[in-house]
Image (cartoon, rainbow, N blue to C red):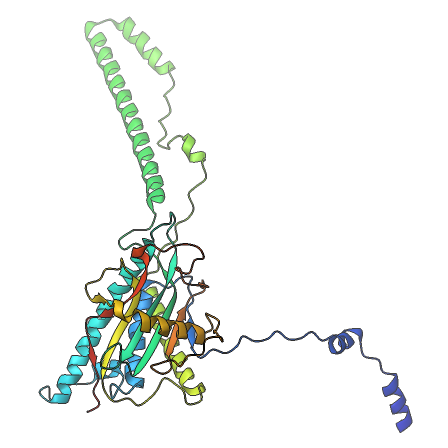
Length: 400
C-alpha cells in the first residue's frame, strides 16, 4: 500500500482547477432581486379573477366578527356565542348577548345586498361606453361613540370587486338559439317525412281500390295486366328520417359556455376564503411586534362605514357627507401604509385618531389605482365617491 506524502496532496490541491460553470457562479455573481418592502397592512389573495359580491360580503362580516373579539367588545367569538346554549334569558347579560347577535345577523343580511348594489353601481359607470369589469370597495369598522369620534378604526379594502348589474343573466342566448334551431330543423324534417309516408299510403289504398273494382267487373285481362305491372315495379325504399344537412350546419359551432359554479363549490370557496382570512389575521397579530390588531378596549358602539358612489342606493345605508374629510384622510393613510400609494415626505402632519389598521382582500386581477383617479378627466357627480353609514349599531359587552 502506497502512502501519499503531504507534499503530493498539496501539489494536487494546488493544481486543481474548478469547472468553468462553478467559476462563473462565484466570479460573475448577479445581484439577487430585492424583495418587496414589507407593509403594515396584511392581505389575502383569493384564487379567482374577480371578487364576487357574495365573497366580499362573507369576508367583511367575518372580519367584523374578528374585530369585535380582538377589540374586547365580546367575551367570546361571535360564532361561538351563537352556538352556546342560552340559560337565563331574563338576565341583563343575556339580553345584551341576544341584542348583539340579532344586530350581527341583520348586518350580515344587509351586507349581502349591499355589495350586490355596490357592484351594480360600479357597472352603471357614467360617461363611458364600456362599463368597468371591477372596482375597489372600502369598508371601515369604527369603534367609538360616533363615527367621527372613534377610538379605533379598522379598514378593509376589496380589490377588483366584480361589476355586475343585479338581475342580469349570463349571455346564453346564442347557445339556446342554436339548440332551438336544431330542434326546429329536426321537427320539420320529421313532419316532412311523416307527410310523405301518409301520401304513399293513400296512393297504395287508391290503387287497391281500383284493382277491386276491375275484378268485380270481370275484366280478367286488365286485372292480369295490372298484376304483372305491379309485380314488375320494384318497391321504393323507405324515406330516411335523418335531416339533410343545412347550410347553417357547416358553420363552426358556438364556443362552449362556461357553467357557473354549483352551490356546493361556491360554499366551499367561501369557507376556504374565511379560513385564509383567519390565518392571515392570526399571523399578523403574532408578527407585528406587539402592534397587532388585538387590544383591550372598553365596550362601546361599533359603526360600519362604506365608501360608495352617490348613485348607490340601499335602504340600510345613510349618506354622511360630513365624514368625507376624516375618512378620506383615513383612506390615504391606509393606502400609504399598505404600499398602494407612495408616502408624501413633504407633508409632515400629525395624524389624528391614532394608527389605522386593516386588511386587503385581493384577487388574481389587481387594480393599480382607484377608478376615479383619472388624469385630466372630470368625474360626474353621481359617480363621486362618498361615505355612507349603516343605520344599525353593534353594542359591545364584557359581562358573562
